[in-house]
Image 1: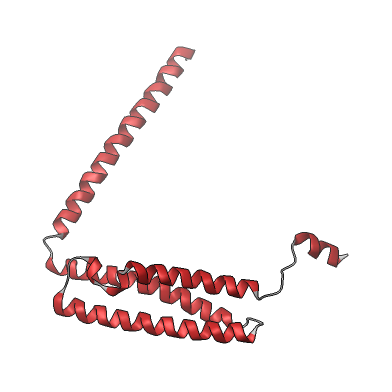
Image 2: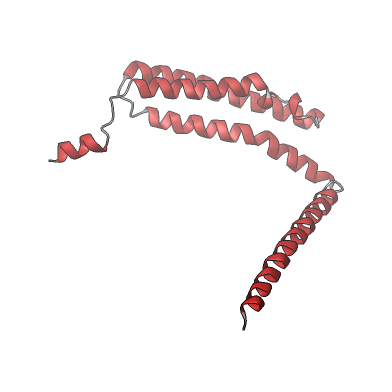
Length: 157
C-alpha cells in the first residue's frame, strides 16, 4: 500500500472516531436527560433521593470523627487525648441531634429545599471542617517528630 493510502486511512479513522465520540456523548447526555426526566414521574423516588441527600453529610463527618476518635487512643499526650475525646463526643452528639431533628422535619413537612435542614447549614458544616483540622493540627503538634528516610538510613548503619 502506498504512503498516501495509509495517511488517508489514518485521517479517516481519527476523523470518524472523533465524530463517533461526539455522537456517543450527545446520545449519552440525551439518555441521561430522558432517564432523570422519567424519574420525576415516580413519586417515591423523590423521597429516596432527598433521604440520600440528607444522609450524605452525617455519613462523611461521623465517619471522619469516628476514625479520629479511634486514632486518638494511641496519642501520647493525655491532656490532648482527653480534650479530643471531649470535642469528638460533643460533636458526635450534635450530629445525632441534628440528624434526628432533620428526620422529624423531613417526615412531617418534606421540604424540597436542602437549605431547610440543619445538616446542610453552612456555619455548621464549616465549623465541623474547622474542628477536624484544628484537632488534627493539635494532635500533630503534640506528637514526636517522625524520622525521615535519611535519618532512618543513618540509624540503620
